[in-house]
Structure formats: structure tokens, C-alpha cells
Length: 206
Image (tube, rainbow, N blue to C red; front, side, top):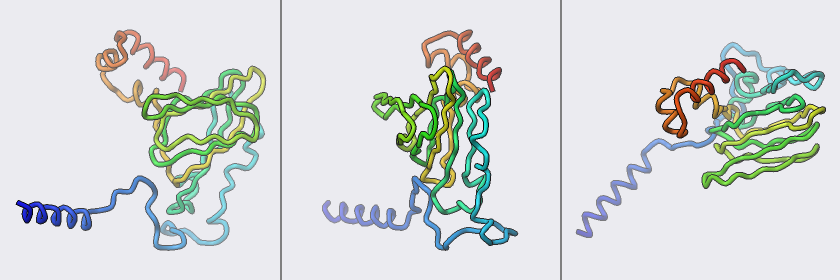
């Protein structure tokens, strides 16, 4: 019996040793940097100019400008990215969402923000940020930002520990992806008409 247990343990350990590693973050690279095909490598390749004049004006809705893998190919393999967020006055909101591949470190550079996240025990942590404050949203957890100031817009810079942190919007994922109305009504303990109104509201405010 003991011999059989030892044999099974050895098989299990060998299986672990030969299986593929499961990565919950960006994989390490074997080079200094990764260059996409047909790209010239000079200082311009490592420069992102998409944030120039970004603080000139604030639109009527939340505006997010990203410097992630899609916008800045030099980030491939570097496990970093940025976003600049502009929140209009009087209700500018970044609705509840998650970043499945990274934590987010938000730096408030203008105005004020109410922020919060919910942990896996369903505990809500909220804070009112002032200029110069940093707030970290742990990886994969639902979080939001809200500008309640009636007159002043807010500006923030977010850093991510991934070249492609990903964004999963809770309202869009739940009500904008075709989940059956009956399932949603039962899940939220409401009725189908309410679900339809929520779905219609999302489509009219895109």
C-alpha cells in the first residue's frame, strides 16, 4: 500500500514538472525587447506621443487614452502600460470594471475623485482622493471612479503591471452580451421588463 502511494506521488510530481506553467501575468521574455515584423528600431520605436496635449479639454463623458500594447508595440514583454483618464464635472464616472491581468495604480493629477473596489469577501473599500493621492486597485477586483464635483473635471494617470491589462466592464458584460433576459431577471431578483430597460439604457448611452 505504501509503495503504491509512493508510485502515485512520483507520477504526480513528474506530471507537475513536465506540464506547462500557468502564468497569471505577462510572461518573461528572453530578449531586451520584442520588435514586430517590418518595424524599424530606433528611439522612435520606444517613444509614445499619444499623450501630448491630452489635458487641453475634457469632453462631456469619460475619456480614456491608453498607452498599452495595441497603441505602443514597444511595450510587448515589458509588463507595463499607462492610461490617462479625464472625468467631466458633475458625474463623470468610470463604471464598475475589472482588469484581469494587472493591478491598477491610479495617480490623481487634477480635481477630486471618489474611488472604490470590492474584494472577494464582498467588502467595499472607498476613498475620496485629492490631487497628489495614489490609490491601488488590486488585480482582477471590481472597481470604479466617480467625479462628484459640480464644477471641476478630474484627471488621473493609471499605471498597470501588464502591457495588456484588459478591461471587463461589469454593466456591458452583464447586460450587453446577449445573456438571456429571464436568466438576468432571476439572477438579479427582478423582472424581464427591468432587464430590458437596463439593456436599452446601455445602448443609448454608448
